[in-house]
Amino acid sequence: MAILIKGGQVIDPGRVNGAADVLIDQGKIAAVGANLKAPAGCTIIDAKGLLVLPGFVDLHVHFREPGFEYKETIQSGSAAAVAGGFTTVCAMPNTKPVNDNQAVTEFMLDRARTAGLANVLPIGAITKGSEGKELAEIGDLHRSGCVAISDDGKPVMNSLVMRRAMEYAVAFDIPVVDHCEDLHLAEGGCMNEGLISTELGLPGIPAAAEDVMVARNLSLSELTGARLHLAHISTAGSVRMVREAKARGIKVTAEACPHHFTLTEDIVRGYNTLAKMNPPLRTGEDVQAIKEGLRDGTIDVIATDHAPHATQEKQQDFTEAPFGIVGLETALSLTLALVEEGVLTLEQAVDKLATAPAIAFGLKKGTLAVGADADVAIVDPQEQWQVDPSKFKSKSRNTPFAGWKVKGRVRTTIVGGRVVFEATPAEQ
Ligand SMILES: NC(=O)N[C@@H](CC(=O)O)C(=O)O
Ligand SMILES: [Zn+2]
Ligand SMILES: [Zn+2]
Image 1 (cartoon, rainbow, N blue to C red):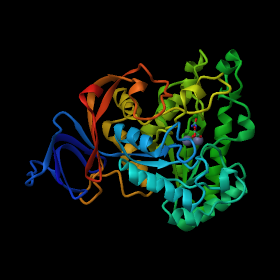
Image 2 (cartoon, helix red, strand yellow):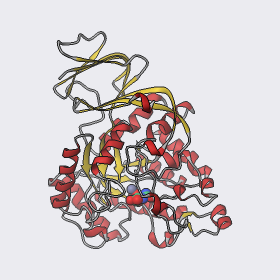
Image 3 (cartoon, helix red, strand yellow):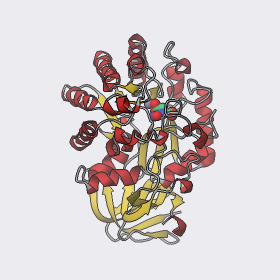
Image 4 (cartoon, rainbow, N blue to C red):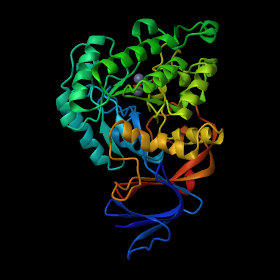
């Protein structure tokens, strides 16, 4: 059935930015322009005062299925995604079993189809069991639908293994995504290493644990010609190295997470385990560098690293609690705060949430061009709301943003021409 989205401000980065109607027919974008006529029987959505955007593409989520369904399922994760305006998400392989083979990939795709909400694209493991030793069947993973490879949750510590993985990735033209952390330098750490970790008596993870692996990966990408995508960069050093590598023509893209451009290590005071994630929250200078990297294009993508954990798991000592926070349902508001602050233009923000991630992974998504899949987020940029984790669609509530008053809310999400999320009055 056709849908006409009328009277909104359409932002399709690099293509359209202004008042326009959007016509959807048979799951595709059929037309974008002024005063479009509604075909007979067409549903009309009034988007006056709202933004009409390509659905967001999250290159980094953890949906925990198979294996940890009490934290999140593909169904609940997909519901959280579309509630946050994300129409496509790439699911990391640190499930149980690890997604290092075709059977797990097919299972995930099947669950995603049953959920029928977001497009869920699996990321295959680089090594068997993500143990860092033997390469997974990268060709099989690619053929069965994995869009990238990563051992996220862990780095690939062995540089020769990483080199070989990159050589395979070149053959299949898929990106290699690394969680950059030198495990020896990070050993036992649970927050950023610095004055605050000393003051709190908590073991630290130095910025250098990330930086040395970023440097290594850039060298290996240069050596092999592989497309390198750096997950969740958090340090000023990473930003500096990526900027320099891009200037030299290395095929690198980088993502930053909302928590890393919004919060500093200061909120770990009070031993709040909701402020524990990997990489850890860093210093004010690092946050500034991340913002500058987003602004000048060094950091291409905003990704959530949506990492659900159960309440009882987070209710442990700071050193014991698992790393990670949920992010799908707060990412838009935290990104729009950067627009409010003057760090990004609105068009840049949409680019980093939708267009650039699709390009980084070579997905035919993140655009409202005629003929594209009709994946659309309709957003009220002015709506103020308070983050209430009990209302999350995610199964988990582990966010440090509970109680925050934020601005910008998804009103309607459309995937493949179907309305899959509508904010109800209770959610306003
Ligand atoms: N980011 C996190 O703190 N945790 C992630 C793993 C990861 O992204 O490295 C998780 O799977 O829980
Ligand atoms: Zn990671
Ligand atoms: Zn992750």
